[in-house]
Image (cartoon, rainbow, N blue to C red; front, top):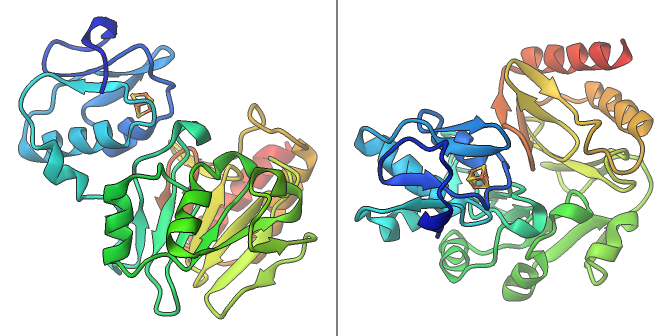
Length: 287
Ligand code: SF4
């Protein structure tokens, strides 16, 4: 929980606030967009929640803040909001956002897929008993896909708790040395009818994305949505920007509607519009 003594001056008066430990990961702004905004190098509460839905969203933001930088001074039902995670992302009830982002992955998002042949965790949230219990209620975790070395967070603890198979590229193994399934090379690998691992070297050498049902693309730190278009971050590239741009072009061969990143915004468009958005990004990068 945030420290009132470190409350940022940029917050408006009222119960909810952000303190100076904020790492500007954007999570709260995505979860409660009418309440949190970026001000300078931090988030701040620029309008106090004014109805039940906004209060709930603000508590969800408080719960999922990786650094515990959000505080609330009134009496709120935080306990019942804990059960909101993992949170369904679309109406199919099969893809969830886990919440509870970890400071170990700098607030990277993680996702959960309910699947008849075993559930998947994509990158890892904090290991918390209440989240573990929710995963149990949803049928456990059979596979953990790790996009790259930075976002593994507590994957080993979840693998241990559920006997799950961790999947990671060979060149990222240092972060998860005892992973059960190792991806090698740069060719896409079909793991079942629904799951395709696509190596996308660039952000890191062995970065991979996961395509589910030709609809959901879990993109790690390779690709995200910002404002009005897709984006890739040269500033945070850690291996090779030319390789990352080449890997982005490679994704034009695939059909998907959702981009679900570790950092940055998720987005759903029609497959045609998503393809156009990716083409636009490739053209911008080439220019
Ligand atoms: S979720 Fe927490 S760390 Fe991330 S921007 Fe909001 S207050 Fe800052």
